[in-house]
Length: 268
Ligand code: ADP
Image (cartoon, rainbow, N blue to C red):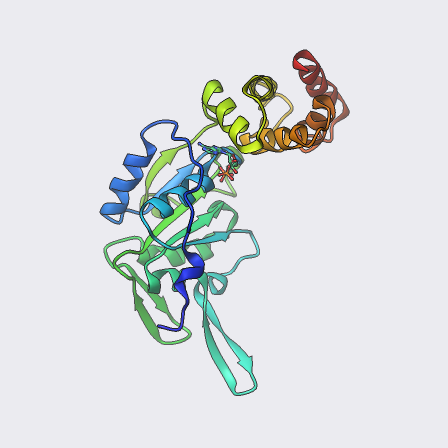
């Protein structure tokens, strides 16, 4: 499969990632033994950025798949396509990653149906193989290949959880929003705003995070704080920036909106 241009999956420039603990060392150790890794945590807390950073640091190509409930096993593995010469097999992203020795990042894997998720099983145990049943081929994973999955335990329900037989194939790392000082530094850096303003955005977010389970499914993510900061850096007044980036995305409920607006007014 030498026709695959692996350079498109390479991360050329160091992504900005601020470690919040010893996750860099732990992930590197897991990669050294090619342990599949599961990243758990709320949306927008830095999981994807961390994987990008690690792929850059470990100098591996990175193939990311955003999982969804309509995704089928063929979307991961590949399928026969019709063209003028007849049928032609096209590898899916998981197969490409296994062939070229990439890190394959399956984002929000819990969104995928369980029958889709099980295709990663033979790749995530001692076999490190991917059977392409329709094609009659078994792909032996490249020695550098690794599977990384993310999921948000907050959304978990009886209907949507990973099977134990899937979970127990991974070493797992828990992520959460960074500590206030660290998060402010991240927001300041990412949005190009002063630290004082970033600190205030973080304080607004902390208020919202305390409302999780009390009318909010999730608090404001680090990603949303970066959005708010970016609007502020474009000279949008802070209250309007917070309304657009922090309040409106989170809720459609008028009472909850009032509560969040009050939190914004406390700090801006
Ligand atoms: P997730 O994958 O958890 O949904 P992301 O990795 O996309 O979230 O993070 C959202 C944004 O938050 C990133 O684009 C980045 O700007 C910022 N971010 C969060 N944590 C960090 C961190 N530790 N270092 C640098 N940026 C971070």
